[in-house]
Length: 182
Image (cartoon, rainbow, N blue to C red):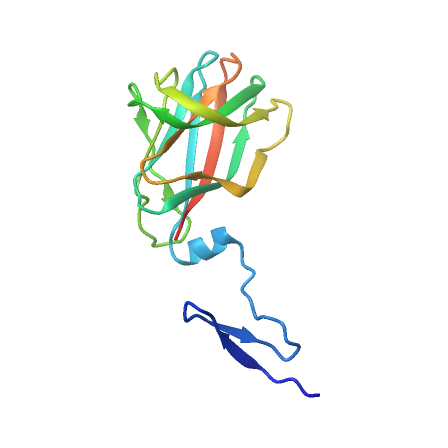
């Protein structure tokens, strides 16, 4: 019995190619790479003193109609160990923030439809649900990397914050990587 390449048309009208070995021809690129190819992948780079324990020092709100997906965070510090809580669905307006502008990871790409800010000290946001705590070790050489294969997802109008879990009185260097999912 000989097998030949063909195509299958799904119920939505999408065509799927089938190879000679009767295997689907699929694109296995990571979602972030696919988003970057379309100019929808961004990074936010900042350094801030994380303030006293329980201070909110980073804020990100999605203003886009598409889901914002955080897939990676890199962080480092040199003075003290820092614990960082990530809370989603926080409310309020950041108090005396420093605006941050996300950089498009594709040269020549457009801007992200978000509000991003940091502050050395508390931004006085309220509420939120803790979805993650990551720890940055002062003795670690280089940046520590925290991957989120399933993503931390912010639908339109939703916000998150980084909250100081400890009281290190130390600067924290952070990069937040995200994309918009269609």
